[in-house]
Image (cartoon, rainbow, N blue to C red; front, side):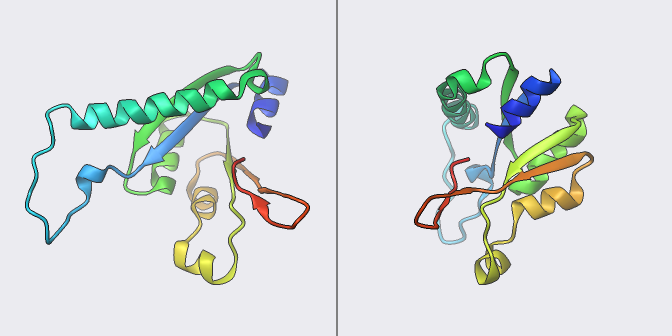
Length: 141
């Protein structure tokens, strides 16, 4: 929603992307090879695209007056998919949420936001999760 506010203020377009690791690229050493249905990859990507579009539509008023497009991208990692899209789109700014992981969780899981900040060809706006009154983070934005 912060990205929509900035896009509206600056008269910019907003691209909302979802990056996923294709399940058909996962190697299962103990499983028998299974041939997916002919249109599996297209159907899978279309389902994700439909879900992303539903999320965009649920934002309603927050996106009013903003030229919004959504994209579903397959990539080896979330960060590499975001950076590749930034490089090909010529974006001026990327807004990315940070889940605020610290300590061991951050060490073990890594930080997509950190990788994007390091590798992005443009400026990066990192948005921290809001904290509720109990002190836990709301990770939906």
